[in-house]
Image 1 (cartoon, rainbow, N blue to C red):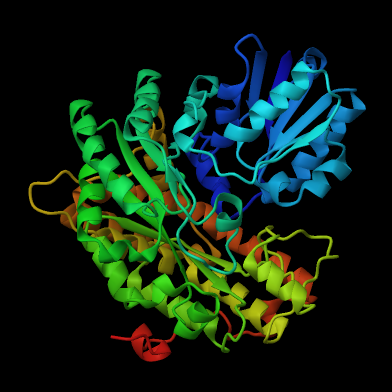
Image 2 (cartoon, one colour):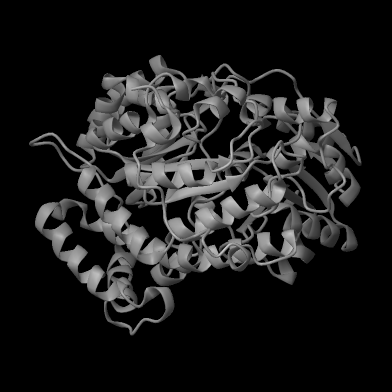
Length: 541
């Protein structure tokens, strides 16, 4: 069998870092781990060609060569996913699809023309698919309600990657999350019992990347890395000596729930193992909204204090925020802005709530007849209005979203948060400071480009005043925290993406509302409430 494995293009988004990639001479942030894992499950006598279409595209010769096209996609990849299926069918090729998007909405993949739907988790359903191929079955849908033991998952085919095109490599340690957030599809896809790989298995994956020559940052893609705390600590205790033995070839970033701040041992182990950053799903500082959406783990301690503690443990914080929860009070966007300024989170991902298929939120809104399921724009796309009727006016939420994004990514404000976050990160005396690592052949280019764009190039518009600020802050970071210079420069470079992307946010949402939100509300992006978050929203202290 000659199989053409394709990862569809991602649209421009918050996480695409388009301008950053251009500056650094890179193509994508991380590789598509799911389809690389599927590649490792295919028979050894199959011929495989793989393309991450975010890095480079396949050729006409590849299409002519293959017998079978295999696609894996997330919801945001829908446009290219659909186009690839239709192209394959027009060329008379069989198509097999899998991943979170087809698993959540299989009827759409069937409507596009997919022949084989390999859904749920591949450790159980890929063998079913291969049996069907061996029997020459022309089509089939393969599902399993059972959650597999991920210790049987093979090492992904990292050898298929063009490593120098990526900012980071990626590995997975666990699937599932113990919490019950109403809007989240992780628990519907992977369950509430976090399943982990073995320590030996994960170290073998790291060794594979090491042997292939990767040196730099690694994203542990778990949706909640600390979901199974016992197994994570076992892994970290073995990872630390491995890192020491290999002279710290990697630094790590991952996603975790805010209750990370409650576990001193976990924070210490992550720091010792080489973690430099963590993404937190904060969502909102409004305690009533957190209760409504059942994100109760965020209500157990003051969120500002949790962020400070994680910084003090040596970790930089990325974070996600959402507008549009049921019962949300007016001014939620302003309170998020105030929280971001108080915690110095440099890259807050602000989004509008979407009801994802078959989540608890989706099911509830469907019963209440509030879903807009006939909308042309699918749930999961960034910069689309809510796909349901919210409890306060849509235009009011949209205004707060656009104004909040516009204000938080105002260049001088963004650069100040980058500096303040780096300065707030503490490291115990005598301990190794972990930071973002750039591919060796890209780091110098990135530094020189940032210096040119932000420190030398004549600026205009809202960037007029950043040159002096840029040099003042460079001096300050080198004087106070020189070990954070790489991380700080990386954050500065990412600003080039966000300063462009905020215009996209404004134009796309304004188009859907029918008028320019910032022109209609001239004070919307003026500034922030100066009062502390605890006073503004009544967080327990």
